[in-house]
Amino acid sequence: MNDLSNNIQVKIYKDVNGYSFPLVVSDGCLPCCLYLNAYLNGNHNSPLSKAKSKQSLSFYTRKKYAYECKFLYCFFMVQGIDLVERVASGIFLSIEEIDSYIRTCKFYADTENDNENSAVVNLTDKRIRDAIHATSNSQPEVSAHTFRQRLIRLKAYIEFLYVGRHYDKAETKLQISTDNKFNKFNLYISAAISSSRNDNTITKDAFESTIPSDKFFKLLDVIQESSPDNPFKSSKLRNQIITQILIDTGVRVGAVLKLKVSDLVDDWDNPRFLLTRTPNDPTDTRRLPAANKTKALSVSVSSNLMKLIKLYIETIRQSTPNTHEHDFIFISEKGKTIGQPMSYNAIHKVVKIFGDSVGINLHPHLLRHKWNELFEDNAREKGFSPDKIEDLRKYAMGWVEDSKMASVYNEFQLAVTVAEISSKNQSQSVPALRGRQ
Image (cartoon, rainbow, N blue to C red):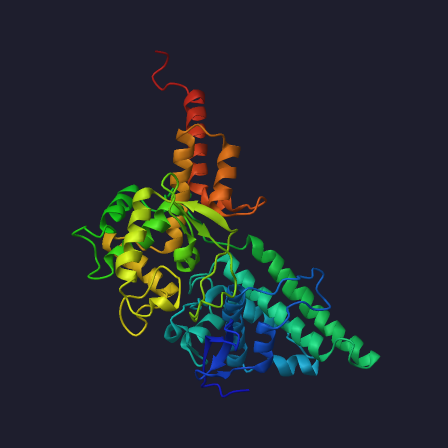
């Protein structure tokens, strides 16, 4: 194992076929643990798994796992625990050690960021040590989802090490002893994972709109290229189009990054673009390739927005160097990456700057939530039934038929509807204070 002074971070590499993959490295280049990275990029099915997935994990799933693996690696190395040696020796982890990990999972907020400099964690980092000894009164808690995923990652990694070192590979007497210790660990961590479902202390006010109306109308103004309040000095047309697409269609950032000139359908009556699913696109040379998580579908846009997109392609994009090397619409317009496809970081930065200019903490997914609020309002005005609205929403969002995401995106409207019904019931049941009129 490496020295405890090493810096640990997640880095993204490309193999000889151009496929991106994550590694947890120390000092900027060396894999911090061969076993950890073998688990991260290997086959996650094991003889102990009941459900066998035939599909390999997507790059972005493995990237998420990488940050969870970085977290558990840093924690146990700070504690002086080598998980590989512990499992190889058949000792595994004590209840006290598991409890310490569980407590730290709740209180240490790691940074998953495409900016590699911000993703570095020093194993002597005071934040880690503080989290290890944190109490519920001393530090804010992470979300229940983050907490649960960290527990799941430890369980899965220990299982990976156990299968590789012990499963059907020892004498019967020794194997029984090792299996018993593994099963005790497995039962204890599984119980913690199960209980974490109801362990979220973060309460969201369902009545609070994703973006307040006054801020939203101001945002619609400042994103315009011609607005005197537009915060950008350059790339104004590109930034307006990108933000307008996010607002008007509700698509994810990955879909915008993935958009190619050949995906545009400039139909006079129904202008639109094709939202494709092409994992491991050989033409995408970005360190973090664009990805579309939803189903492939056709996305309608307004005639005015299509005109702006074509104007951008025929003027700015066409006159920028290096754009002949790819078909992606939105490009970097200056610097070392001029003419290359935009990155996730670049679009997030554009949206954040627009948000700062109107006084809100804005990121692209908030615009997806806002689109759902507006969609609900417009659909109700047209008289569509709730079932029809849900079907339309699933299609527009690219969700599968049994998706439960509609309820997640529509908490605001649900809360308002319940309040209206409750208020009406209360007005009918509460007697008039001044007697009969």
